[in-house]
Length: 177
Image (cartoon, rainbow, N blue to C red; front, top):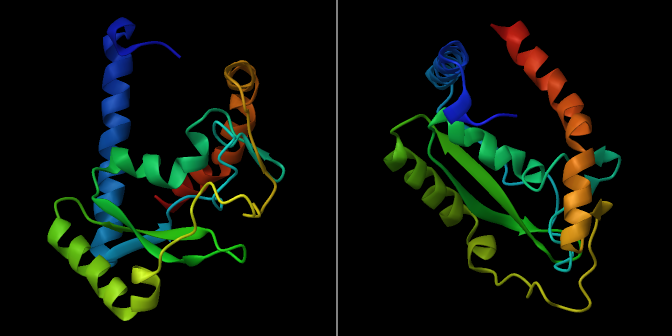
């Protein structure tokens, strides 16, 4: 992957066209729906001794951001998003709900989050467990590097596996156009 400073003008134009297509798809989605609601992340809280998750069950993540795909992927859509507490895993670890509204609809987003918290006061005011709690049980087969060297080795090897995971999502999006 190169840097933008070295990109050919045709590559930049293609990226801008792809972004425009994505943005138009987002506007079309929000023409039908007021909000998009997703989990904040795709896995439960993980052992604090991991630098980041590199695997969830059989799914290998390509880098230290891939486990947060539901959060970072929305950044390029220019949609405001926020996370509210929704509850706890069976081990007592906190779980978040991400609420997304159409571009420039921050007041609607804040109102939706406030309405959710008002409807679920026990969750909104609960104190989650301390992340360093020694008896916390981590679920779901989450694993990852614990040292800088392990993180470097992971970054060199797992990208293709994660791209293969995302390919069906891209195909589904393309087929819906």
